[in-house]
Image (tube, rainbow, N blue to C red; front, side, top):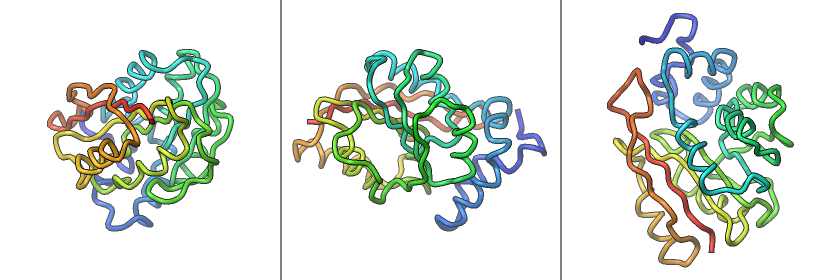
Length: 211
């Protein structure tokens, strides 16, 4: 289904085409009010659905979760429905995060940018998720360093990663962290079509255990 005119601000091409980080934040802020409807009704985004299934298979319901790059909380909503109660969210877009805050599914919602220092203490989460943020022109592979820092040893880091057009440096950084003894692979899922309106786009769900 094509993107309806009233949802045009939330067309994925708008985000992929941002020339810099300030423009990206501005575009997410502008789309926040229609983002959920656009993703669900027009775009046919399924990444949060697939990652929620993976979280349910691997993460105990009592675990404290950080939803990194949470956006409007599409993943968090599914996790809340599944029984997860102790969740915190961050995102670079204040507008998107305000929508997430109004859903009342997170204990805390804070503006933060993946790839930069995150305002959490060390090892405070039992699991950290990142859905839809590791895609071209978005959060960098260096984001892994902070996700590792805030997740306790034995905890899990679970995320979607664009597989048809993998952003630069991700495969190399994943392996560097394995070689450095920072994490070990639990599961690398099969690529799945993640955007119905653009069937060539595929993502994969990854699960890593922090060492």
